[in-house]
Image 1 (tube, one colour):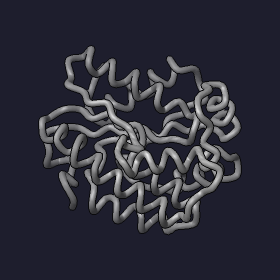
Image 2 (cartoon, helix red, strand yellow):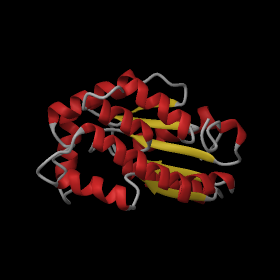
Image 3 (tube, rainbow, N blue to C red):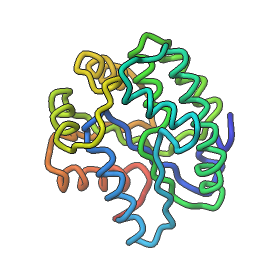
Length: 210
């Protein structure tokens, strides 16, 4: 295993939110982090792409007119994740804190897998190198809903990722991942209903009552 790879041998918890663009995962990650703090937990909120040189290259590429080769995308994601784990995730887990992360290596599995790379290999290599989550909450919405929500929220467009046919492939890649730490949540309901489902997931999977 990589750094703190086995969740049973570290004091902290790693909770990850995944989903296609517009799934509502960022909103729900922030809500969950706030509820965990209210319940007395020490929480670190973080996200990917991480704010480092490789992460900024990914952001620029996502908003630019020209995509890069899938292999280059994969290299950048791995580079930013190594820095992210080293600087934020691993230290917080070692301190016994709850890390709530908006996207992590299953995003790379799904998105770069949708680019045509070997998703199974990416997953195996990621689990070997990086801390394995205690729980991944995959918020599923259909692609049309996700794109509508992404457009409604405003902000810079990311044409490299926010395209219907591509997101259909991404969604299929997420659906093909089989891991015990992965739990699917219906994201089509209103935010309060989704938050209630997430609270049940934490209770059932991690014994955390909110």
